[in-house]
Image (tube, rainbow, N blue to C red; front, side, top):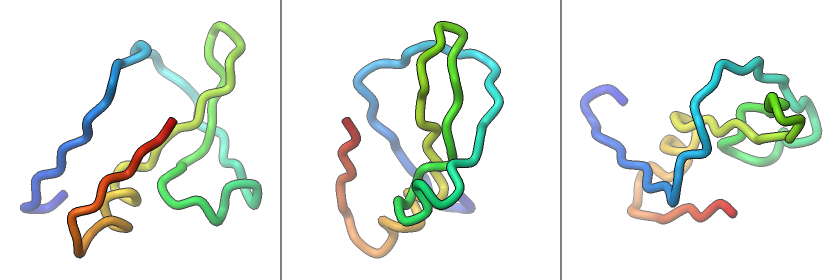
Length: 68
């Protein structure tokens, strides 16, 4: 992001595929860092993270964010 380097640590990558992101509207509007959701080819609903928004919300201090 600009001249700053950002690292994201993940336990594992599920896969890589092209998806259509559906906005969650008011359902998740108060949760920072969630861009929307998609339905995988297997029929599972998966949340899509908004990494720039997560970084922006954590800016100003070294904080850790844990998602399960």
